Length: 113
Image (tube, rainbow, N blue to C red; front, side):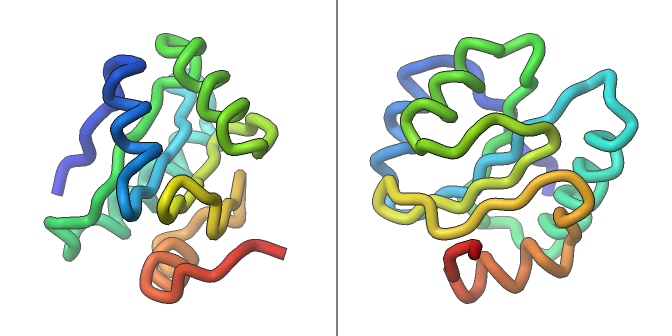
């Protein structure tokens, strides 16, 4: 599955109210973020119906900042945030983002510690 890019504030607001969604914050110019994005895509390969979007943290900086404000999770890149009913259930950044960690959290819906 090819992940969809978040395009506008209205879509962000809709997703924040969704039962479940995985956000991925990605910098197109950062090699660490590129590695994380590969892991995110690898996680999505067998999951055609996974509710998820990614945000270009440079090109869509206002959306990235709004997500940080609304969730209370400080911005990092790369960063994955799993929300259920608008609440953060899990988040990770940098090297903690692997296909395996995404799959484990997406199936369990557990909070980060």
